[in-house]
Each structure stands twice: as C-alpha cells, then as structure tokens.
Image (cartoon, rainbow, N blue to C red; front, side):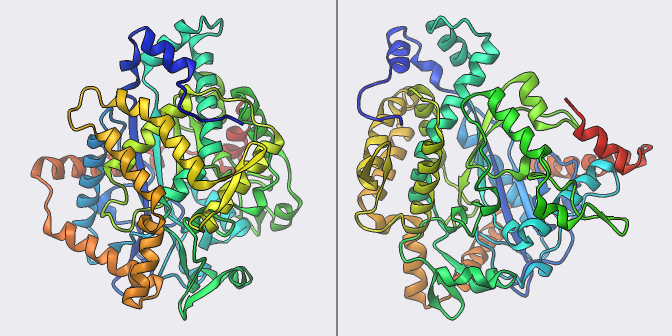
Length: 528
C-alpha cells in the first residue's frame, strides 16, 4: 500500500527542480450532476423529459440517466473550475425556467418514490442506439431493481494537463510511447485514489439517512438500519449510504475482479465480464415474447453497468464500445464518481470542494502507486463500506496496508501530502483558493459535526422532520433561489439553439434507414 507522508514524492521534487511545477495547473475539469425531478405532489415526476430542454439522446449537456425523471446536467471541460461551476449554474437556471412547477431533488437518495413501478425508465426514441439505451435500462431493472437506479450523484471529470504528461515522460526517460506512458500514469492515479477514496465519503458524504419508501421493492434490506422516525432509517455515524451495500456497491458485482494495474488488464477483465454468461441473468431471458428484457444475459450487459468509484475514460465515437476506445486511443481523462449531491447547495457542489478534489487527484498522480493485489482490493472495499456506514464514529479505525489506523490520523496525513500541490496550484492567485479549500477540509477532520452528513441529521432532529420532508424543503429552497435569478438573453438563446439542434439530430437519426435491432446489437458487441 502507498504511504502518504510529508516527504515530497520524487515526481514532484523533480518537477520543482526543473522549474516545471507550474505545469500542474490548467487540467480540464467537467461536472456531471444527476437529480430526480419531483412533481407538485412531492412524488417522483411521471412526466416525460421536457421537450423544451431538447433530446435526451443527442443533447450534449442536458440528458437523462436511468429514469425519465432522473435528469443529468453536464458541463463541458474547463481549465478553470470556476467556469465549470458557472456553466453548471446556468444549465440549472435554464432547466428551472422550464420545469413548470416541478423541482429538482437536492439529495442523492431518492424521496417521493413508491416502489419500482413508480420510477419511469428513460426512453430515447426509435433509433437503434436509442432502443439500445432503453433496453439496457430494462436489464438494470430486472437485475437490480429500479429503485437503486434512482440514486443521484455527481461525477467529477478531470484530465491532467497535456504539457505535464510530456514533462513527466521526459524527466523519467520513459521508453514507452507518450500515449502508453499517459495511460499508465492515469492508472497509477486511479489506484492511489481507490486507496484513499474513503476520504471523499467522510468529507463530502451527504446521505446518512434513507426514506423507508426506498425499501418498498426490497423490504428485507431495511433490517440492517436503525429507525430515525416513522418515515426514515439511518446509521447514526453514516456519511454516504449511497456508497454502501444498499446503494451503488452492488453485491451482484462484488466478485468481479476488474484489473486496475494496467490499461490492457482493465480492458481485458471488463471485456471478459461483458462476454461471460451469468446463470441468474440467463433465467431472466433476453428476448421474451418478442420483447427485449436485457441486452444479453452476461455478468455485465455493457461497460457502464460496472460500478466503480473512479473510471478511466476516452471520448467515444458514435456507436463505439468504451473499452475499444480505451484500447485504441488510451486514457483521455478520469471520471470520479463517489460524490454525493450537496443538499445545502443549489447546484449540488461548490468551488472549494471542486478545488480540493483536483488537488487530491494530482497528489494521487504524483505519488508512487504500487499494483493492487487481491488483498489490497478487499481492504479498499472494506474501508469504503466502513466509512460509508460508520465514518463519523469516534475512534473509527480503518486498514492502511497491514496496520489499523485512526481515520482522523490517516486523513491528516493525506491532507499534509496535498499541501505542496495546493501551494503550486495557488501560485497565480493571491486568494490562495486551493490552500483555503484544504484548510476547510481540515476543520471537518477535526470536527465531525461540521460534515454535511452530520449537519443533515442535526437539522432533521432540530426540525423534527423525516428525511424526505427535510430534503424536499431544502430542494424547494433551491427552486426559490433559481426563481429569483434570471439567465441573460445570450445564454437563453444558446440553450434554446442547442435544444432545437438536438431534437433535429434525433429526428435525422430516426429517419435514417435502420438495420434490424438484433443485427445492430450483434455488430455492436462484435467490435474488436
């Protein structure tokens, strides 16, 4: 396991010695944010994705995730995270101006649902690619239930500055091609992030409680929790139940051995899971009475079904398999997926949090990153589950390599190791926003009651509100905030144009001659 301490890593020392430390700045950041649309009755919206927002299939920035009611708002990548957040704010403003009395739920764990059948599966029209997306979601329903798929989160996309890869490649006299060196470097970052990913749940977890309605389709799962009130269950010291066994950490995938030690190992192990039949899924059937129930009956239908806290990504061409894009063109950026929505913020994330994450990802890149063994993998999972369920428990110890360590002590070590990176990222800015973001998180390590997860439970106790009522009240505040703001005409026109273009693009796709759907799937999965 990697040991984080105050000693600067060789990579960082060399960059400093060569006067190239400024190359750490300017990596591209993009944000993807999911939210459930809630109707005027306080329940999950049954209305279709508003056509005025454009086509969920072809719009680059406004789409849907699992459900027709689970809107996903995406920013382009920006070198300055403040610009990404401004863009996210503008999309929210545009969406809110067209929601017709609905609101966006500000919490990650769904409220206002009434079992699986209340969650409408997203539709993407009649084209083959649109049908494939819809059938894939049907498969998720039959495998895991719809309720789990209605959980919302934030994905933070980050690409390391191109010039930094060139400098590292040069200073390490690497014999690899720059593309392979870059992919290896991203996998090193990913492995280190997996070792430390529990820190994100502790600092930013905001799902310590769950509405009882979440368990309507799987009542047996509720027994593991304590009752907060007649409508809510919780763990008193939980940080992010979204990232626990009842959320995204699916037991169906627990035995998948996805290899993060190299790009080729990752592509191979993920491809194997997509090609290996799974008896339980074979029982569901693929085409039953002429209707597709899932894309196939293998362990994973497609790559996206594998849930991980961080993914290597490459920009895919239309209809291209993600593993093939990675294999052919290497890693382009990473997608960090373990962030809960911040219920106290109208867009779900703020600037200090985004800056802290960027600095943490760079710190993970600059540290040595040994390969992950099967035992390491088990430790990583156990730490994540411990922090998700009990992260604020006084004296909680987690596994660091072969030893137990107090969560606070290890967290302090990690923050200390980030200090030099934050100082470099701050060089051009008198406000020192990265160092300031780092200090904000130190306060959360020193005082667990200041974390979002603790504050949510405190608020619920003080106001005597179940989780659903508290979450909906906060979400209504956000709606009021957007109702008092207005987008400028230039941005309105831009978003209206994008919506119109996306609808035209979907129509053009659907007007094209389509090969039979069976044939389309066969061609898709035969890509090598």
